Length: 51
Image 1 (spheres, one colour):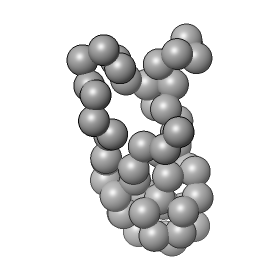
Image 2: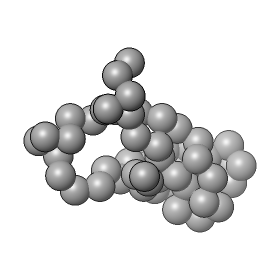
Image 3: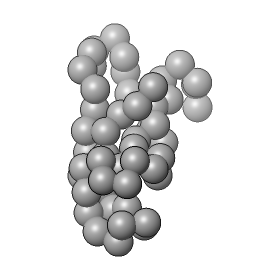
Image 4: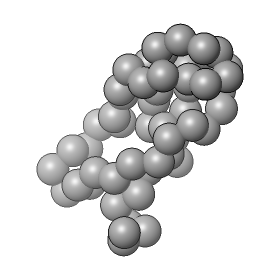
């Protein structure tokens, strides 16, 4: 995968980076937020895009 499109998804509760994803930065300017499972918290929590 191209490193230009890679983003990190961080748990909103424990602040750990659990997922890596990619997005088209030309069309999506705002930060991505997805509800994913956090293995450290043990539940589904919103994960926000970090730098």
